[in-house]
View 1 (cartoon, rainbow, N blue to C red):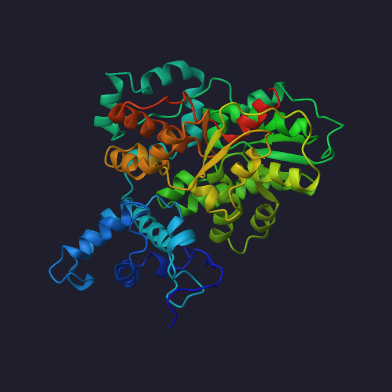
View 2: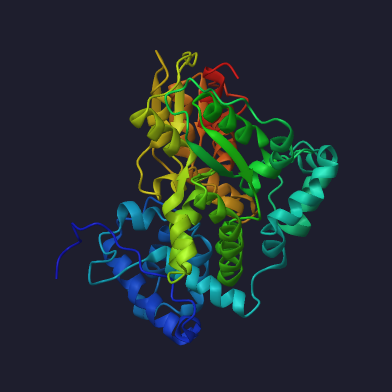
Length: 448
């Protein structure tokens, strides 16, 4: 038996169609097997809050071992997991093909799937995960919705915290009145026929966040690609299902995957590459969907055709070369390497992309922001998320860059809040007004 594996990690399909997957006693047996291994290893103590909670639970027990810990105490450990995959990707020495066969995030997902099956997922969690419905409802009244959810609203935000459990201090993403798909129908950028990459074609999977919350990311991506000779189309059938995956609704994720694939694959057949504009969604299309539907050939084809936007631009730069005209980013850029970008196992493509800018210093922060999707918005998690993300906020503040960017828009908002907290403590600054997506910096460097 080896202490860790030197081989590349292997991720097994999620066996959610097997009735044993939902067997509570079998789940408890597996939780105890994995937790006992984690207790003896403890390499993950400095990642998310799951591991400190687990180790404190065991250390404070009667024997100091897992045998004296009641299974009733496991839920806070599971609830603290954000499914970021960093323990699997960067820390755990016992992931497959090691014989211990540990996949901590997918074990947490299994627990949540059983909760979801037994209707123990909270009403608020279910409502927050309805991103398409929420976006459609908010778009016509975007100004009012943004006023009501702003942290300066001292009436609605405390009420929202009391009723829905969303922390009154957590900055929430804003909504836009005109979605990215609506913009795309009216404002197709002219394709640069003289660009080295002219002839490429790509269909942009808009993602719920870009479509409803930040269409500027989509506009920036289309402008950069058009400048580089890439013809683009914009498609958005529905959400990738990541918010539902967080709460264990695997069947809903599978349904979304099949519907999105049905819309995107005809474009693949016409020679288009598929580009996801947010790393969480790219991760779903490239990796999570094939693990949920391992026998679905359409999902496999879509996975092979999908690229993250920063990955795609770097590929153009390496193979054909970027179009001329890039200007420096004044003051330099600090890039937060988001967890779901790291989990794609493609390297820090956002930093690699921004290093293509002339005379621009690019720093990279490879730590979790602490946000974890909708997890970090909740009252019971927000302060923990700020604590987990403090090293990133501190490094970003000390770097004093012209710009802080993150491929994950929610992580960007969270980092800015962490920087603001530190500035108030130490009197340091300045704090950037926004943490844009890296593709927006490249678009600005082209003059858009």
